[in-house]
Amino acid sequence: EAMYTRLPVVAYEAAAIGETVDGGGIRLHRKDLAEVAETCALVTEDRDLRGRLVEAGLARVRDFGADSVAARTREVLGL
Image (tube, rainbow, N blue to C red; front, side, top):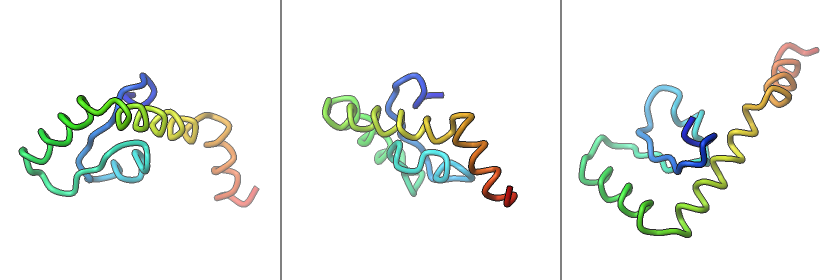
């Protein structure tokens, strides 16, 4: 939802987050509060980084569009 609404993503690498976010955000590999705060501050303060993350997130959202998902489903099912 964040990527769809043009918000930059900072997320913990857990469960399917890495697969979902892919290159559309910053993935953190440790639950380190200082690292989270520093990363969020960087995204907030660096307009260029924030813009790149928003654009990468929007590109990732397109990967989950109905046509893309249908095409991948047909490919997996061999149709």
